[in-house]
Length: 268
DNA sequence: CAAAGAACCTGGCGGC
DNA sequence: TGCCGCCAGGTTCTTT
Image 1 (spheres, rainbow, N blue to C red):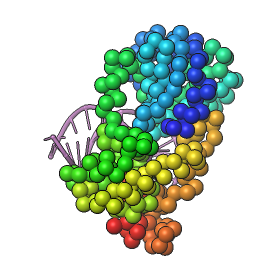
Image 2: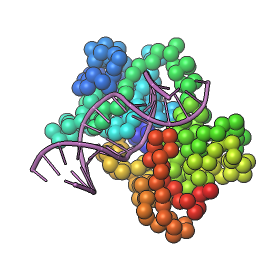
Image 3: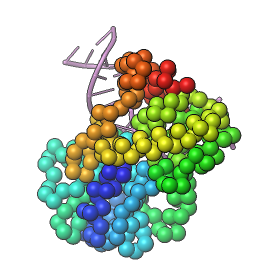
């Protein structure tokens, strides 16, 4: 999402949305496509940012257009019309005043786009935990999150109300990097381990951003290019392969309903 | 109230 | 070839 945000900013900032085409009502539900279009058309995008896994397009009126890609959402920017094959999973088009357009594609149709008023915004973003890449996200904050909870540490990392923006891939990779077992009860994590976990989360996310995300299947960046972080996975989706650190076998279990990959000898 | 499980969707894969 | 079940970068609602 950070990669998408960085690439979308120069294409969208300062642009006026001249046209809105909703090809899948599910994307904007519970708003009707007509109501969504009416509220968005003519709006000026002043800036773009990200909060957790949400993309936010700030509009001159004070409204915010929020986009969540969920599992298979993709945003692309094009100056020329899409080829027929590229329209297969097209859900939304925002036509801009410079002739370009932003396209939202989504195979599984889990993605969401909605508008927030300035009044709604504060309460909405309040539901999310801190940004893991912020300076203020440190061992102390991590310890407060881990303390008095016995849920498996991986479930906590994925809980967006506790920390905003860590996904399944990055939770697995950060836990491997810090040598912590995904099922460890969070209250059993020491100060030293918490400090290591914070460093691992930050370094994993930074490295993934540098490699422009993970293209396991459908993900592409705004220019349609694959990310490369999947080439550096140490445990995620490597079950049965040997651990790059110890040579032992990478295991797969389910944690909180999510496929979870780890090295039983490196992660305790 | 926390936690587990199901639901929301589409499509690819392996097994039979 | 075709059908079935399982799995998938996430969140939210329901059930236990």
